[in-house]
Image (cartoon, rainbow, N blue to C red; front, side, top):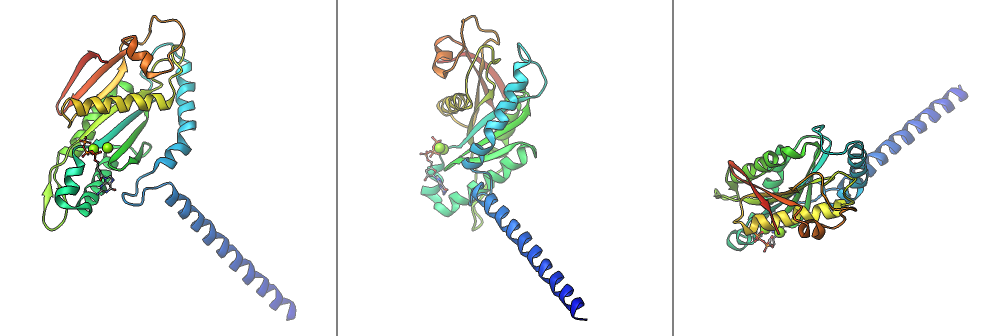
Length: 254
Ligand code: GH3
Ligand code: MG
Ligand code: MG
């Protein structure tokens, strides 16, 4: 009789401990999720990017090392930097809360553009980074176009029955940028290229995308490119502009 009671008590305790452990594991997971997400929009943050990018980049490089030139095997990473146009004016005219509402909706719309396996990161205040994984670089302009349309295709609800139009500009670049035998361009350098593309998109009038791609896949220069500046000096950069419906190749840019 005594022994049975002891056994029951032991089982009860074990159950309680198991439940506590599961609750703790769930809480830990939630905490970890929160530390990798942006509180306003719920999308991933920079910390998430820093955690995941080394593995993804080396995987993309490993695949690229097996080929001398590009093949259409959908194994590139495509980085799209998305910056809201004239966003300061939204805050100034309608208030910070309205601005926040626009940012949340932008994140939702970008979330619908990307695939489940892609990453959407709030990169800074009103800037997002979309990483298309296992992608094909020649799809860059189409994907950029989808991003532009997702933002400018429909007005944003800023509350109290008010809706406003909003556009964004996009700069993008693929990784690896050149076949690895010609380049040591890091993810950081490719992000600098995407950022330069974004700058050019703003300069060309906003509400458009600029992708920076290699002018040739087999450069004549001996040695490896490591810095964005070397690419521009050698005329290695080709600008791909996407403006709504149109895709135009503009040639080499400085
Ligand atoms: P541009 O077309 O050149 O990008 O113009 P812009 O006005 O978007 O650029 P700027 O960098 O001058 O302004 C960005 C603004 O974004 C300023 C800042 O107050 C606002 N912002 C950044 N983070 C947040 C946020 O979390 N909420 C709100 N409401 N505004 C934010
Ligand atoms: Mg900005
Ligand atoms: Mg902006």
